[in-house]
Amino acid sequence: MSGLPPLLRKLLVLLLFLALQTVAVVLLVNDSYFQQNAIMRVVRSWQMQWWEKTSSWTAFTNLRKINDDLSLENNRLRAKLARLSELEYLLPAEGSGRMAAADSFSFIPARVIRNSVNRQRNYLVIDKGSADGISPDMGVISARGIVGVVSHVSEHYAMIISLLNTEQRFTAELKKTGTFGTLRWNGVDYRKVALSEIPLHIDVNPGDTVVSNDFSLVFPPSIPIGVVLLDKLRQGSFLELEVELFSDFKTLRYVNVVSFSGADDLRKLTDMETEEEL
Image 1 (cartoon, rainbow, N blue to C red):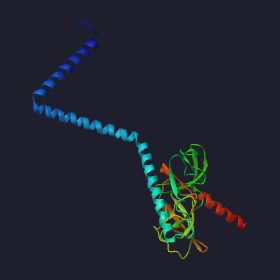
Image 2 (cartoon, rainbow, N blue to C red):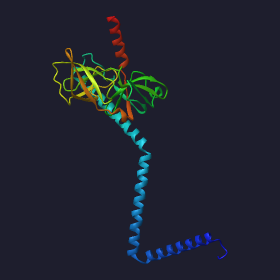
Image 3 (cartoon, rainbow, N blue to C red):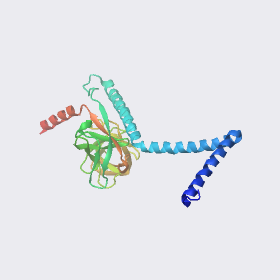
């Protein structure tokens, strides 16, 4: 052993020490129940810490899949809620010519891969397209409100005209009274929009909830949008209300594209009515 290099001699001495130490620990554990129990507690403690760390890492790496699963579950719940809302609307007036119950809403989950909030005409891009059943003019919502409307579609991607677009207009209503007006963004604060054309005699208070309207062809009714703030601007015989959005567009990651089976038929009727007026 004297002829071996110094580094190798030190390594062999270390390995011999570790081997003898292991034998000593094994003999001690086998001959003493107390020592065996103490050592097993330490080993179990290390094992539990290792399991906890590996579990946390696994949960982190699976976060996207978990979010996708949650999004799918939300879609199922939204679809059920939309059907129940339709039945509630239809049953009191059966045979009155209202929309058929088969004209229902369904939802397609998607992930936002591009977004902007600091322009006058903001857009989003999602990771679903025509191959997933998405087409132009479909509405897009999030867990906290309306997001926008599909404008352009490729096979695997779609561009959304955001609610935060000064050229975009939506119909919304005050939940308390059912009074509807026009919802638009003024291009200033990405957390606030304006609800206009509200008659002066309507009782409006700060904190009143604004929701999507039954007249919309792209959104289910009663989707929460935001709450009325203090400021009221009088415009002739109407009010313009400042509304704080529930959605934070800067943190928007997952959305649902709304598919309404009766939208095409309704659009044909409204187009015919417009042509007759002309």
